[in-house]
Amino acid sequence: MIRPVLRMGDPRLLARARPVEMFDTPELHALVEDMRDTMAHLDGAGLAAPQIGVDLRVVIFGVHRNPRYPDAGEVPDTVLVNPRLSPLGLAMEEGWEGCLSVPGMRGLVARYRRLRYDGVDAAGQPIDRTVEGFHARVVQHECDHLDGILYPMRVRDLANFGFADVLFPGQPTLDE
Image (cartoon, one colour):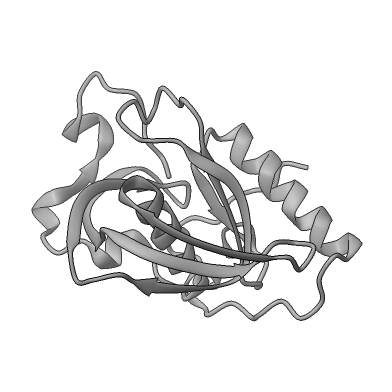
C-alpha cells in the first residue's frame, strides 16, 4: 500500500525512532512492503519508516539504473533494521541530496566517503557491509531519518540549498 510521506515541518520527523524488538512478524513484513510500494511510487532511492509516520528503526534503499541518478553506481535493494553506522576514516565527500520529505529542494551535504553498516533484515538475518560513494551517502541519509535529522540540517552553506528546478534547470527531479 502506498502511504503518504510526511513533509519537513511535521514534528514526527524530528523524533528518534524506536528499535525493532520482534522480527519476521506479519506487521514488520507489511511495513516493509508498504515502504517498498511508497518508494517505488515516488521513484525514491530510499525511505525510512519515520517518513511514513512509523516510529521504528527501519530503512529501505536501492538504486538500479535510475535516470534520476545517471552518475550513481547501483545500490542493492536492502531492508535494514536497527542499523549501526561506523565511518571508515575521516574522508568526507560533498554531494547534492534531495528527500521525499523535502520535495522539490536540493542541498549540498558532506557525508563520510566510506563506512561500514550492520543490522538485520526484516527476518532478523544479519547484514554487514562495507560501502563507499553513493551507496554510503544513501545509507547515511536514510539512517539520519531514524535520529530525527533531515538533510537540510546538514547543509553547511545555505547558498547551496534551494529549489531543484532553479539550481539545476532542465534536469529531472532528484528526490531522495
